[in-house]
Length: 425
Ligand code: AMP
Ligand code: GLY
Image 1 (tube, protein in one colour):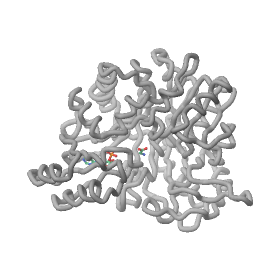
Image 2 (cartoon, rainbow, N blue to C red):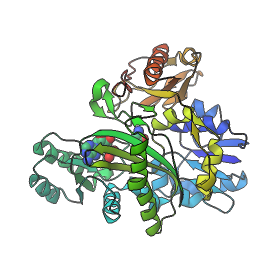
Image 3 (tube, rainbow, N blue to C red):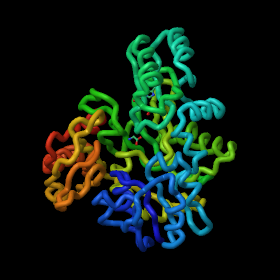
């Protein structure tokens, strides 16, 4: 197989690392060679990534006889990159633009869930602030206010009071805190319970459930501070026992895939469902059309089997007899973020100590916001800089080891949580 991997974050480094281990993979190409972790495993396509120039990637795939394309992030999926790169003899992991609406438009996905009777928070979409506020004022409890469009996991405000909810409408729609993602909003009932992320590979028809994980979206320990793209994750997530996983599969994942097909959407890729386990059963908080980041980094080291084969089957409609297994041990992923993340990350600072972390048993370090500077030194270039993953017999051990590995790494002003998985422990 000759694989093109689109995307340049920690998730894609973890995917490249597993793809590289497949005996079936001859070569991996990357759109983002500035990520030194990915560059150590994949060859650059040779031109800068621009989703508006899908034809260049298409020409590249034709010329280099790429037969599998794996699209990691949501933005190119929403822009229709999967549609543009699909060709006979070439399979693409990731839905086309229509399927990607499940993530790219919360208004669309809310209507989709309602039509398919998929359990989710009661809510409504609004395209003007006045109507949204009138509806909020009629509610007894403060509802959650969400920018409908893509906002890097940050476009959700969970207000404590009705006043805060009204203010959230202004922040998203008038002040455009999340830019055009806030042209439309979804306002919905605030659900109570424990959260988990569930992933399934979907080949258009058949699904393959992956092991559950739990993300930590808040910046600071004990779930304080602002929402981020994700500060850490662990797996397996025991909040979802076998019985709950079966319910999620039957009540949410399968009906979702059936409803997509009824809508004429041939969804091939990863379906990520953010779930709240409420007293009334599991309910959907959000869909994503891709692997989570950092959930992917916590899953990949536990995957037993051939990732390239699994993704090929996903993209080519042959998941039916796929096999998958998981390392029984636990994994814990801690994200090291720049000073100032998520509002204003400070970048350009040197990073050292990764070798010391990697010298520990069962520790992996995936690059996200890093690059080599002109002198060949590793520096930070983004908000989330590194994902540090450790495996151990139990979650407490994995967390301890991940924290010890983080302590080996030096980056001035770095922030990371030390309580990933603590609630579950
Ligand atoms: P989302 O990006 O939609 O998953 O939302 C980000 C975070 O906001 C979730 O992980 C939840 O913690 C929280 N959230 C979203 N929707 C709701 C809801 N209806 N009720 C309570 N919390 C929510
Ligand atoms: N970690 C959450 C996400 O990838 O959306």
